Length: 389
Image (cartoon, rainbow, N blue to C red; front, side, top):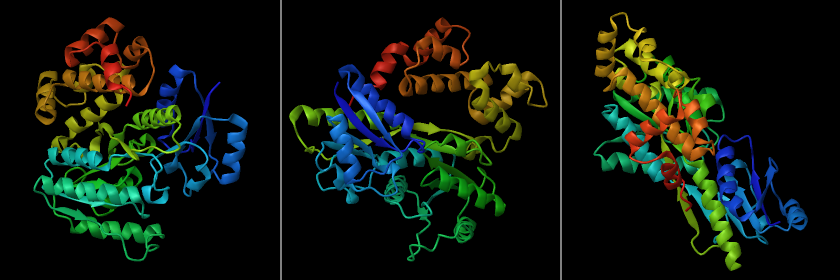
């Protein structure tokens, strides 16, 4: 049986999605994907694994490792995912996160909240992906005629090794920003630090500052105060692209790929309380939006949400519509639809199971609703959305 070596660290939030994408492409050709997990590859270990498995080639999730010797793969057709291009061999094929598309999506989300100006906060440690996202966000701001306030990294590379120094610098930066301001943080961990600094400065989120991160790392996003909106990358597409590129290389016998870089973009924004400025003026509407976001797929009913308001159900729905732009029931349906779309793209879950997961009473109701909202049957929509690169 043919095999592919796949190097990753399962400790990374993105690991599962990328691996699922690789297996999706490998499965039709009955290619075994041998996962090498949490082992920083060097020339010796790669050579031993290649001798044992005799693989067609390798895929390396380079972003999983703090340090990577890319030359260890010089004898194998290899595709890298998410690495720093400058640290890889000149002609090594690479699948990268599309920073420009991610920045545009973050800018659009923040501008839609009514942010007068925009700001970018880089990661505490200097990272190539942080710099790329910052530059792309500044370009997106200029495109929309807005000024972008960027927190600059210090000349001393180790100045922020002390988290206390970092937090103090963050507070100084936030205090000086105009308001209302929309902040794009380099990733979710950085955005969580921004939210902590804002709380200690007495700044309201999303009233004074709307904040959005990248990665949709659920354990972080669901446990900040308020909960954190995030741009979710299409990690499964990254795996599909890498596997398709590797198989193309093996079919032609090429050690390297002529077209070096491919890009995978964002799936979309997972909207939480940190960018829901529209509801900030109505505390009950804000609570209702959070309840719907968390419980819409668990059999939540409109009357359960209306009970959060200290008024009649009709008045509750009117207040909710004024804050959110649609009725309580419409919001529940919208959350269920987004959940269904994500499951169709990111999982191999059967349609009936998706219907159950999204809180529909029966699969037929889900199918009719989905077709009415999207104009396509669920199977057709899934196939189109997951078309191989």
